[in-house]
Amino acid sequence: MRKCIFSLLMISVILIQISVMFASPAFADDDANSYEVSTYAVEVYPQPDVPDLNFCCDDALGFRGILQQEAGFTIRDGLENGNVHEEMFKKAASGGDDQNHVDAADIVYYSGHGADYSSDISAPRLGDTTHDDEWVLPYECYWGDQDVEWILLHCCKVLRNGSAGYWGLGAMHGSHLICGAKNTIYDYGLDGYQVAWALVGNGPYCPAVPVKDAWFWGGDIYQPSSVQLRVIGENDQCGNDYIWDNSYDPSVDSWKSVWDYTCT
Image 1 (cartoon, rainbow, N blue to C red):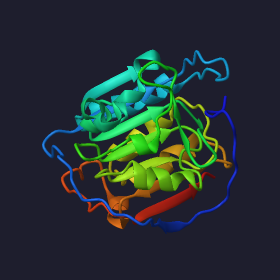
Image 2 (image 1 turned 45 degrees about the horizontal axis):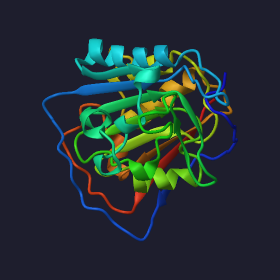
Image 3 (image 1 turned 180 degrees about the vertical axis):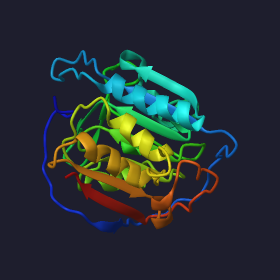
Image 4 (image 1 turned 180 degrees about the horizontal axis):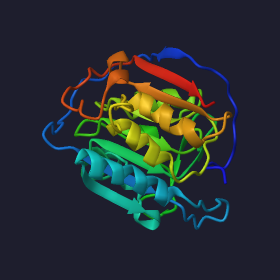
């Protein structure tokens, strides 16, 4: 089953920058001596207009399991289905609790639905509708002012053209990268596992690669050639981050670097 409610096909492999009229200060309270991973997976959707998914929990489990076993990461959150709440992604000023969840780990992996919230914004859509609602929206997020460096969104369309700018400029406040998809990404349970192995490496012939490249490489194994992946970085340097590069704080401004990759 597709991991979105609507589909959109785009074709491009580009490096671009996005700008707007404002800039933000740099800040982060990264814990360079401790590496933490959080995963959030949603397969069960009580909403009548949203189909259930099948492999998101396996997808997230494979990701956090490899980082824990092979790289010594501590699991901060490993939450599923109705235990995944929108407020965990949202800044305190908007009524959220990200400081104890998404922004309390170094790397975060979400696996579930993504869909069009509006004509301008696509967003992760959760199964729980009570804390506070089912949509994780970019202007309610403030990722990176505490700890998180890398957010991986295994869901459809969140970083499509148009929507990507809202995520890069609205949600990134000290985080290094947001990894996602421009169009439909499919519900495969081993993508997170493959991305994690690319992050940590597997012997001398398969060395670790930067987070950006791990997202592209891991997604390319099982996803069909129609899938378009995208990574937004605070700057070009963030595109070279390995998972142990959590000790520097990029300057936050209105320019973002964007890398696109079409699966083969």
